[in-house]
Image (cartoon, rainbow, N blue to C red):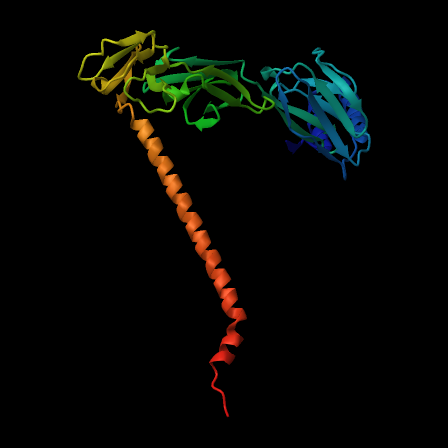
Length: 390
């Protein structure tokens, strides 16, 4: 917003006098009389102050322009567009643009609304006050344009763990340029942005380079746009799809106590998780052949009637298009009485511990009784042992 002073009434009168002097003799007197009448009607403008405020508006919404006067003395107020065409002269609208509507007219204010604002409406609008000297102030209308389209593009729909991929996000045709931020889940990442300007509009493209891991599978990559014309944050996202090799785990489902003895049975279950999911798992015996009495059923290994020749390492292998992995189980077969002898030894230790505890308790009780006994008979012993005096 700025103010300016137009040519004064005396300057206008001087210019008109020059024009009258150049006029034909018949019109000269009439022009001079008209000049003197007009000059007498122009207020002096002493103490009046014309002011206005800049306006920022979102495209398609309504802008309000207000020309205000302090200490008004009924001077004429006029509003002009950036091309210096009169929008309103007092409460009259010479301009044929019906988007301009009068909101208020008084001696101290001329308020006008402009509906359905577009970028072409940007610029300086002039308020003029017809005083002596005339005053002028301008307001600048700034139009904000939110991004017309927000697109996210990922280099590969499916990535492999450990691979680097590129993700691009484009915010098109905004004013001013947008700010793009990247997030992987709740973690903010840093991208690289480029701005392209065309006809006062800005297109921003941001690129993110990302190394993916199996933990990223199903995690959203979010492109978030910040712009003064957008309430809150505008965002779009894509979910990562990451392929990874299997993870293998062996679980012993029988025996439940975990002690494998001669004559018992052993059942192992192989669990394999990967993406894509492994279609099958295989069992092998490392450095030896699988026992003839072993039974393989899908992911399960069952060995009945264990003996010491079954000792060794048993491996479960799983694979998919990404790679393969394995897990090992080391089998050691104990003697058939290993568990019983352990139980007997445990019972013996418990019995011995109980006997020792009883003996210690009995000795403590005996010491307490003896202590009280000697305390009671201490005086008697002293009298018996003292010598008699004749």
